[in-house]
Image 1: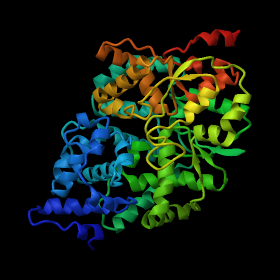
Image 2 (image 1 turned 180 degrees about the vertical axis):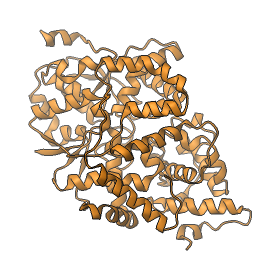
Image 3 (image 1 turned 45 degrees about the vertical axis):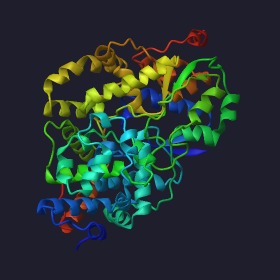
Image 4 (image 1 turned 60 degrees about the vertical axis):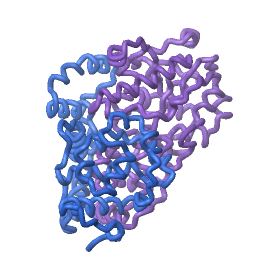
Length: 209
Length: 290
């Protein structure tokens, strides 16, 4: 069944099958965001880009991201560093005169990228996020040391050595916890997680493990 | 008045000073703080951004647990504060989300009925206790200490919270009443870079440098923060910023609760001042120790 959003955003004749498929998957995510439909109302004013503290480092600025989505270039968005450089500060979201939840749009693109494994080259964020998610799913809490170790080993182990002096300074101030912080009812948490994932399977939607 | 305390993961490790000083201040102001039993990670920006539906479900477990106690939830970490509020908001606005979460939680005997208020401790101090009452308990005037009030990005965004999204003043009013001087600090809600410090360090170092520069040029003796990640990025990475940009920053970065505690006469060591990487030794610290 095609969603209302997808119907409103008629796929154009020039769109590849892959693109229109990405588009309806993206719109499905957007529908879960309160006020998500406002993405239609972008006036391309560029307030988002001007407010973004990191737009200077992005391949595609926030304003252009919305323009490219409209033009049927979702795959290019997913291949850019843009959605991974967003630091979630919400400056764009609170200033957008059209009320578009731009930060949440970035999240929707991220989730789509992960579901389809479409990434830019050299992407450190995914390694950090997936380490974070697996620690939280297992223990119920984040463990900063464990997180940085896993991330370092996945990306660039030599950087771990470069981080050692800072780690030592924090340790000497009692700011590093080596105890394995975890919740008691981990069984409950994993049942909850399993249930959400199985709901997704029955809805025939792709999942991320 | 009793509150349910949701400390979040950072307050157990890198931000212990926040936890210690917050508990001290609440205790002195006769605010009861009961830690939520068996709370789990809120999901933070990282989990929320890559799997929103799953993140809001595990976040809702906390809300369901807290709701049985009935009290307002105090979340000192800006990220926890934002994510818990956001989960509440998502459930309120979207029937599909509400149904999915209810279905996932029900077999565990958990349910969230949307009755909680998620509060930041700054909001509690200023709006529940009141600046006047706090001032009446001051033991040590902050005697003209020049501070830059840094709110960070998430505490006043994205939903309308307890203060203005562009120019919040809650903390400025509080510290002015306690005798500090608020320096001009137009970057008060600018992003510190958050987790980019780990993933795109070049970008984050630039953001941190801009913030430190703004505070220093306007004559601040310290930066006061409301968020563990802001505190960490601004304090622990000053060395790297100095190397990269040829600067000489030595700016102490405090949690707002540490400074309130100091004004209320608590000894610095009980407020975690010994955990600072850039030591905070303003002129009145000696007088306080004496």
